[in-house]
Structures are given as structure tokens and as C-alpha cells.
Amino acid sequence: MLLSFSPRARPAVAALLAAVALAGCELLGDSTGPKQTAGAQCDGSGRVTLDGTELAAAPNGFVAVGTKLLSATDCKAVRFVGVSRPALSFSPEGGRLSMDTAAAHDFANIRSWGANTVRIELAQYYWMPTARAYDAGYAPRVERVVRQARQAGLYVILALQYSDRGIASYEPVGNTHQPMPDRNHSIPFWQDVANRFKNDGGVLFELFSEPFPIGGEGGYSNWTMWKNGGMHPAESTYGPRPAFQAVGMQELYDIVRATGAKNVVILTGTNWGYKLKGVPGHRVSGYNIAYSTHPWNHPEWPDDNQPSDWEADWAFLAKTDPVIATEFGTRDCKETYARALMDTADQLGMGWIAWSWTAPPAGTSPAQNGAADPICDRSFLITDWSGTPTRVGAVIKQRLGSY
Image 1 (cartoon, rainbow, N blue to C red):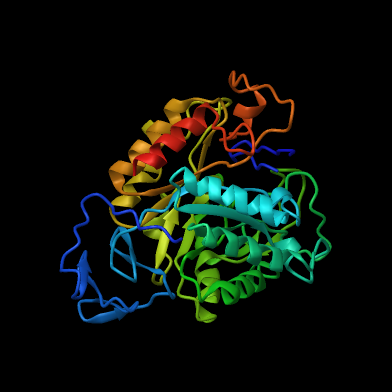
Image 2: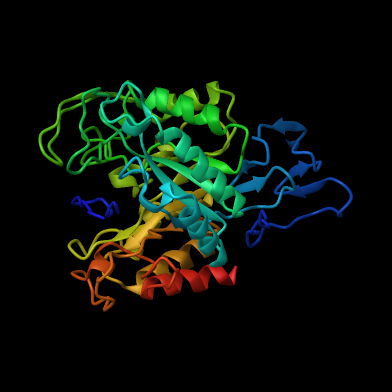
């Protein structure tokens, strides 16, 4: 598959299991009575209370309590760990995901590594009937893929990766990253997605994968725009593009909740999803909210996104809120970066999702020699569709198997 890169973005590449208990989260109570974790009580029927107040939860879903995401079934804390599986954001067919047998095979292999979660990116211009690139089979295809992943024993994170500035005539060519979701298409997109999956709490909603709102607080981290939306200025990050009406995370969150969906909502930070520094001053009001970061090791800017930056950029938030690294990768095949990220996540009790469960085209050299190597540059985790791990993939597989 073809890739597109940005100065700050990661590469965009074309049964049910037991919950993983967080370290330090003690389960109290016996097996026959109500169970309690971090002050929350579960009665076994999906009803969760905290200090006498019932908490909202989707069927078979999760509730956010402090820094934890607790299963509404048994009040055990769950870490969402796994991989991203392209490519429903790159084409309406999604490559192998369009084939029932191949998709089921991939999800079974992902599960066999020890993953409990798969992240699937979407494009709103394939979903929305008002968009030029609309594909009538896209939404049913996504539903089928989610169903297959759930049948394989995986939780699913659905992430809006590609939007279109709300322009009906938008043609998805070149790099289609947008700085923010938009009012015209992102709002009805999430209304429809939430309605379709609100009865399965094992599906989590990542409202926008890689925000990079321009202006405001500076650079690609306009936190006022991130939370509240507004008229986003014209910009030329990937070529000249017009101004558009952005929708903020608060309103998009409210749109999801208005459907009756109580699923966990994931809010990804600024600077292509990496930074969470502005969250304390721009919190979204609501419940069952987790925050997300996207750490990437880019050889062309070696002093950014590094482990020494993480505490100030995002790790601090995991001490007060649920945080998941819903995407991380390395473009130079350095296993040390992947290990450092997973070590930090383990120490903080965070979930993490590695990029990506994608095999290179036939004939690609398996050398994995650094930034110029196709496997490294695309952060592939497997060398073939049988699931043979790359060097970094082997590190991911080993860690998943250790939980």
C-alpha cells in the first residue's frame, strides 16, 4: 500500500477473553456477592455503582473510574492492548478486510499473539451519502468486520482517521489528513456509527485519530479549537486547503451520547494525536472518557516524541485519567523505542495499540535495515499474512504474550 507522511504525523498504511487486570487494582469481595474495584461495585448484571450512584455503561461495556476502565460485568480493570489493522481508511474495500475468510484469519492471528483489542480506522467520506467518495457497501462492511473481530475475542476501537472538511465534492487524493473533524460530515458520521454500535460496549469510539488544529496556543496544538471547534483557518500542511467549520471534541462527544450510546469515548490529543498537555485546562465534560496519545519514533526529527519527552507531553495525565496509546510505532525498526513505550505503559497501567498488522508487498526485502527499509519505514509488525513477526513485531508479540 502507498503511504503518506507529514512533518509530525505517523505513516498512514494502506470465545471472549478474560479482562487483563491492572497492577495495583485489587478486586474485593467473594465470587458470589457484589464485587468492588476502586470503590465501584458490580452486581454481575451489568449494573455498576460508585458511592451509591449508578454509573452509565453500555451492554457488556466499561466504566471510567479514576485512572481505570472497569468492566461493567465484574468491576475488573481492563487494559486495552493490541494492534491496529488497516486498511478501511485507505479504501472502501479495506484490502483483505473485504474478504470474510482473510479477515477472520487475521483477527484470529491477532488474538493468538495475546492481543485483546484491534483498532480499525475509518474514513467518513466513504460512509456519508452526501460525500463524493460515498460507497454504499462501506458501513455494512465495517459492521461485518467489527462482528468478526468481536467473534475472535477482540475488543474494537473504531477511529475516525480521515475527514474531508465537510466538503461534499472532496476527492480523497494525496495526503488526506485533516486538522480537525468538521460539522457537515463528522457529526452525522458519529451519529450513525454510535447508533449502530451502542448495544455493544466492547466497541470503543476514538472520535478523531490525529488532530493538529492550527493557531491559538501555537503550532499544531490549538486546544481551544480542539475542545470547542470553530472556523478553522485555511492551511497548507499538505498543500493549500480552504478554511472550514470544525467541530470540537465536546460537541462531538455530546453527539455520541445523544444517541443513547454509553460506550467508552476516546479523545486523542493535538500535534497529530501525540500531545495531551492541554487536557487539564480543556477537559471535555462527560463520563466514560479516556484520552489517547500517538507516540512515534521519526528518524527525521530525533529530538521529538522521545521517552524523555513523554512525562511532560502525555504520561502525566495517566496519573489522573484513563489514557491509552491508541497508536505507536517506529519508522527505523528500533525495538528499544517499542520496549520503552510498553514499559512506560505498564508502569502507568495504560493500554497500548501498536501500528500495524500489515504485511509488506510480495518481494519486499526482509532486511529491516533502518529508516530507508520499507518494512521499517511503514512500521510493519508482520512479514507475511501468516503472522510471522518482524523484529519490532516480535517485541510486541512477546509483550502481549506476557500479560
